[in-house]
Structures are given as C-alpha cells and as structure tokens.
Image (cartoon, rainbow, N blue to C red; front, top):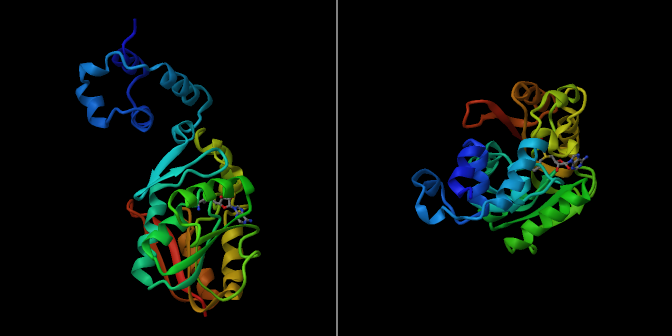
Length: 268
Ligand SMILES: C[S@@+](CC[C@H](N)C(=O)[O-])C[C@H]1O[C@@H](n2cnc3c(N)ncnc32)[C@H](O)[C@@H]1O
C-alpha cells in the first residue's frame, strides 16, 4: 500500500503541492520537511484527486482549497474571483502612509473583498462601498465580509465602477483589470482560469484606469484620495494622466520586488 510520503514523493515536491497539503490537512510545512512517521498512513486519496485537477486542468490550488491567505486574513475564493495577490497587500500600507482615512471610501472591483476588508480592519473609523460588476464575485465578497463581522461597515453593491455610488467619497482604492487584451492568451494556464473580467483591461490595459481617473473627479470630494494598482510598465503613463487631469501630489509606489505597481494622488 502506498504511504502518504510515497505519494508525496511521487507527485514531485512543489510549492503548490505543499500549499495545498497545508491548507487542507493538519500537516505543517515543518512536517513536510521532517516527515514524522505518525503521518505514514495519512489518507491522501482526496488530496490526490485535487492535485490531479491542478496538474491536468491547471486549476489554481487556491480554488481547489476554496480559500487563500492575504495579509492576516483567510478568505474564501472560487472561480468567480481573482485570487488576491501578495503585492496587492501593500495597498493598505500605502493608504496608511499617505492619509488618515475618515468617512466613506470605496473599493472598486472588490472581487473577494480583500482590499475592502483589509481597509476596514486597519481603519475602524471608515465605512466602505465594495463595488463589483460581477454578482457571483460579490457573493464571495459578502461571505468574507460576514466572516470578519464587517457587515455594518462594508456595503456590497453591484454595478459599473462608481455608477452605483453617490458623490462626496473621501477615497477610492482599486485593483482594476489592467492586462492588455492581446496579452491574455500568453498568461500562464493557471492564471487563465481566473475570470476574464478580472484580468482584461482592454486594448492597452488602461480602459478601466482611464475611467477611474475621469470619474474620480466627480465622485471623490476635492482633496480626497485616489489609488490604483497597475501592471509593470503602466505606472508612468497613469501618473502622467493623473497630472494631466490636475490630480495633486501624484506618486508612484513600488511593490516588494521593486516594480512600480501603484499610483496614487489627491483629487483637485
Ligand atoms: C483584478 S480583479 C481585483 C479583485 C480584488 N480587488 C483583488 O485585488 O484581489 C478586478 C475586479 O474588477 C471587477 N470588474 C471588472 N469590470 C468592472 C466594472 N466595469 N465595474 C466594477 N467592477 C468591475 C472584476 O469582476 C474583478 O472582481
């Protein structure tokens, strides 16, 4: 009979396999290194079925586990939402460094609700609108918001960017789709399992960002904060567009890999 460790070796150790095992079993990463004999007979059949789906259908391990970690959160994810990325975690720190958030904020294109939840937990004095055009994404966001007991502070609304909101917001954050349409086909197969709505930023990747720059001036109060995540190579263009539209104190922020990843400014 194949033991757990024989199965593990047969799969060929990878970070994804370790992640899936740790997410779905009592084993820790240390167990996977030290291989205590008490796990020799651990039932690996269910893991094997999931792992085969990852290998053959390229389903991301986070979708297979139905969850992911982001900052200090454990969030539900499924194929309706983008898997929140580690670099996006910095959005919360940038807000903290640039403003003392008050009043009503919005997270546009909220997906799993990661950014809205992160902001609400870091800044107890704010209220948030979590907007997404996808109803099925909003269902996931709502479950995550319920889980962190934030229903009285974060309100999920379905719609196109600012459209369902009233003017007078104090701040906006967004990680919009920003990949140029013609690059979508060249993405890794696992990334292509994520919703096209979450990835495709139109011909030059900037369609949503241009919209958020123009509409930001209508929906965010003068002096309010505006921040987006962008793709590598887009930050300078976005910063120039913000300046062209008279946004103040425009800044480009790097992620931990030193890639220009975020652009922020204040509404004129
Ligand atoms: C890159 S994902 C970001 C998800 C989440 N905020 C995160 O950082 O993990 C972009 C999100 O924008 C949403 N979206 C796309 N077009 C939209 C639109 N016109 N209005 C509102 N949301 C939209 C997608 O459904 C998706 O959830």
